[in-house]
Length: 628
Image (cartoon, rainbow, N blue to C red; front, side, top):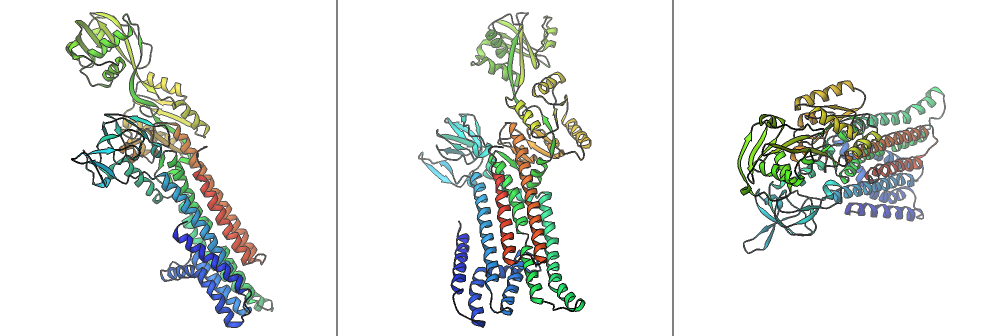
């Protein structure tokens, strides 16, 4: 408990004790009123003060006003009825018990989310001239500064490792507990925890532009983007509160007048005023006003725990309504890294063929050349290579260990007059010839993520009706990947503008049949991310473009997180609907019982506080997402 909650608990306990003591004090008249006024003001002074401020600020109709009017009226009725003030104080006491419980529950959920997102570093270590370390505020560190991250410390700023090897705990960012190994040359991002080795890091961002700052800003501002459900509650409360005040006034005045004028009976003003005051107490919309925003807040926090950053409750609501998911291919369903996936029709040993191709391509920085060099896996000795010549759009020729080597596409083979074998494997085919003789072909392709098929299957189980893949790749490659993953539709050889057109077509076709989500890497898909109903960035760990462009950011490259995000959002929306129906239903029932005299103020308070507590507890269930 915080200090404010402890103070309120003490007020509740003292008030309860005073009520018990005063029950045995034989005071009458104004003395009795004065004695009972002490516990009333002790437990309710803040409610009365807030009601007064609301009246001064012309914001009259809130729960504080309702409680103030109801309890002051009950105290007045106590004077009229001969000194029974217990009910008025009891009403305020139980209302404050409910408020205390609600405050404790909300603060606990906020504290849990705060601990979950406690990724802001306290300091950065700068090297001093004498070899020591100086702790400075991360905001003071400039780009290009060398910092030191000791074992057990949090990485304060994005950067590149200069020296040292270690493993990083990225669970606060990705939701995964598997450590990530890093060494010299590797990029690391702020918010991760260095587990064992000492790292020297050259910073690549200022702190306010680093990953941890962007994530914290995203989570802190998520509450400003309200969903339709939250906006409904705000509009409902603005209409509902003055309506019930008017209804209470009618209940206090109209039945006595009808009895007096129309029926010639005793008006029973006290009875009907009491019912009107009870009507005001039970009408407080606390359960709705508190539990709905808390449900979305807990949903956003629960998603963050799983490594899913949602920029607002409006996007959480849109996720729950997603029925069509459109994927970019490269970097989303595939790893986005070209790799040698096979060697075919080779007349030389596979290792020799790879060596000739890698050495011939050693002067190129093209991704295909890099993948050949990576597959070779040995240091490249430039002294073994001479007379490198690049044939535009075809490949390269070079003298390797005294042998004339050609490596490229089929057009290069045709230009050199060398018969070549056609490939049946999907991907980029590099034909290799040595001394004018065809030596074999190397297939290079983008590898499908091992969890991609599971992700597509999980989406279908989650109720997604349509899966689509958009890619700039050739049609045979695109169809092979889509068939392997079980994706329903595929559109290939698309430019960025074509992808936008395809998404717009889907939006038109599916109008009124659920939301369309686009999943991309967040770097070159910004136009489509913005055009879809909801843009989701995949593989976005540390990508500034992804965090800026997308509505939802999955902080690692596991596409299975998408289905989990949808399930979390649907659980959140389900709880929101439960709370709305439950709170309004119980509220209407109690109002009717009070109006016809079947429920008194004690029952009204218990009903109001009970509904609020149950709604808050139900809202907090959204935080528990591990088994979703």
